[in-house]
Length: 389
Image 1: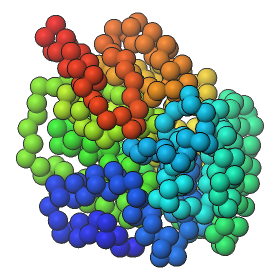
Image 2: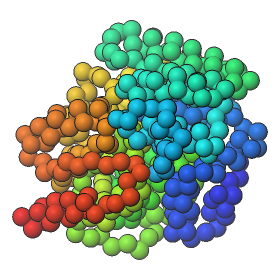
Image 3: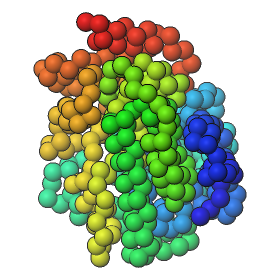
């Protein structure tokens, strides 16, 4: 187990102190845990939203880091983009341009026009290689799994060249075991959010998930298991709050202060924050062909998002399933500013919620927003109408 002083002595510290350390580490734009990994000789693969098979990087000994932007000003990145783009595109590049994040390989995905061009922009600005992972657009074709396995194999060649290590079937199978454990722990975390949300503040739950994209997964697994074992011991009282589902955080992330404001106003019992880190909703089975198993899992054992088009998973129906599974009384439909995929789905979401009689609030956010007065007023009015109607 690699020690990380950024979470120093967490196994001997009180739970509240550990959760504070987790929040601090997630909010630190200098990414100290990633820097330490690289300073100790490790290599880092940065991948943009939404989903990336992190097992491929892990099997080659690399640290997979989820680029989720940061609440910083894109002073250097502004000149590389047009004006009318979402914030996460600019701040993810800014982290690299200002030296906070040094990568050995970058991978993006064509989830929108801006993200499709991000790999080329990284290539023009850095010497390390950049790649695009083309996840299948037609998830319902009989050839989809075979195609995706080939795409994963193509990407493996780039990872191996950078890491200087072959991704053997045995190494990939061991990495799948590590990430299966991660998936089980993340499912436990969300089970607790749904059953006893008063035991864990919304911003703490968010931070525990976000750390999966910053720490070696073995370290994160140990940390998350330690926290989950101690949460039931907390002396926390259930309060009379509305149970809500948050929908709209699949790519750009709300600032932690906004998550905190949501948690003060209601219980966030389910959400799609950082959904890529828990996109596979079941364990990946152990087979003789782990690449094929990963490809099959993406198609057959995955969640939903506006950037995957699968006729078997209508997003509005999946949202209603999420609401019912969490026994939520309302939904917050949000979209990041300038996010075309997120804004497009709002029409279908709101129509489905209206037909189902589920109250909802439509709002927007930006990762580097600093004023929350307007959103908090919206939330307070929305919640009061539900509680006292």
